Image 1 (cartoon, rainbow over the protein chains, first blue to last red):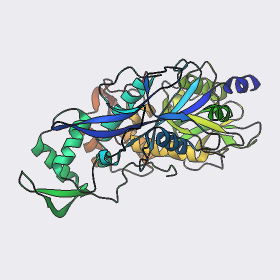
Image 2 (cartoon, rainbow over the protein chains, first blue to last red):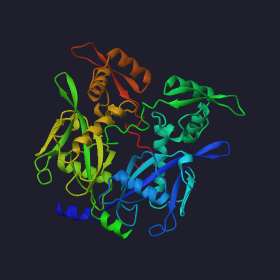
Image 3 (cartoon, chains in turn orange, yellow):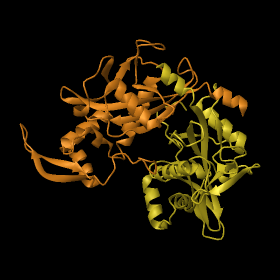
Image 4 (cartoon, rainbow over the protein chains, first blue to last red):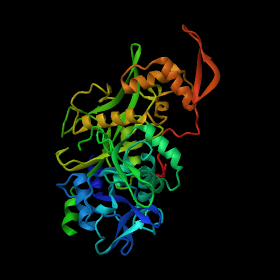
Length: 225
Length: 225
């Protein structure tokens, strides 16, 4: 295996993170993510996902958290591994990127530091490396997962109205949902617990709900948390 | 980033593959996978998942296919990326393993070459590295996925009876399923197309079904196939 080993020494491992949040634009919300402007080659000047090299003494998720905090100041409550991207030619040297993703509530998203900005996830400029493809895949996973998991909770405060929840689904799926049907589906799913509280305001009072916290936001299976 | 870069050069990338098949034991089926006995340190003599080092000029899935064929002779019709395992201390050197998984029909599984054997996925010996954890995670994904995808098809010939399909589900889920309920659920799901053919034998003739091939076995989303 000597040959293989020598060749493999030329492969480097990086971590990157796709952090989605919901951004309110007018009366709708859109899925947004932070990008970092590259200050060195390759792709100097282009926007890229926050990330960096894996440290020899770091676990993968720890490296993702560290590089995310270093570049954006964001410290999400959880990260989930998305996919490993390792095509030959995705960078000027051979780099395998282990990509993590997470959701943050907009309130928890700090002001963007220098060289960092938030972008509409569905209308990105040309990004460095294969990062457009990575974001498209993360969006597909988000839309896919919202169908069979509690992932929408990642965008919501502990208590929310059915209209809040519908708005999250509409932003993720990119289409309007029929309010009565949505209410029926959610109520019959039994995943929400009604609270005694109501939100009052210009509209008629709306009941506040919360998720059943016995259910994990992201079921990581038997992987160490 | 000089420091980071230097440290990252000490991380090596390997690929491993979990190949599940269904093995008939008496009147039930069990999920089985091939393992390769290690002939060198670390963990010389222990069984491990088929795999090897990533070549500098290979894409990840190509490396998984190559190392799988080299060690087991198996060439599955598709591989799906499972997860990247990279904990510090999972090997004597720092190795990040990109793990792929696939299903093969037992008829397509070649005779095990030297140093390779098939094991019951739910009753494994102590494996090299963190491979017990990797197989447990792959089993969890298989059980999880059978609920919302056509993955059972990966174990079946093109035409099969509802009893064949139920047996696959029972093997994957590790429990018996009620035949009438199973029939109702499958028929109402509309994922099967009845053929004009029946299987005859000791029992009364059983209708043969096939999957709707408009539906992909594994939806890879926007990733390149």
